[in-house]
Image (cartoon, rainbow, N blue to C red; front, side, top):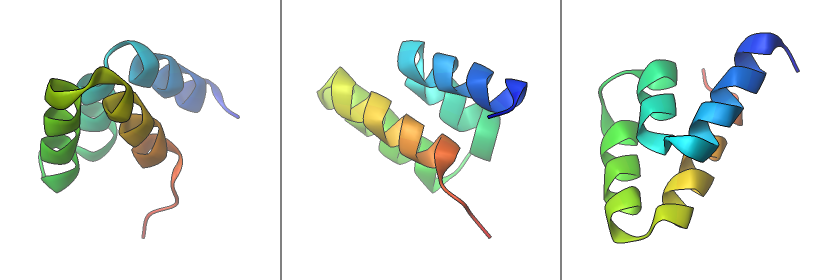
Length: 57
């Protein structure tokens, strides 16, 4: 795990929408994460961790 990944993981735990925005920018993932954080905070954290650590094309 490199430094960028470690920093994004920490941000994903503390501020999930910020981590998703930094990793993927504006888009569907950010909207999903914002909704998840508004409904309940824990699903927002889990979604942010998934987005940051998944392998995307």
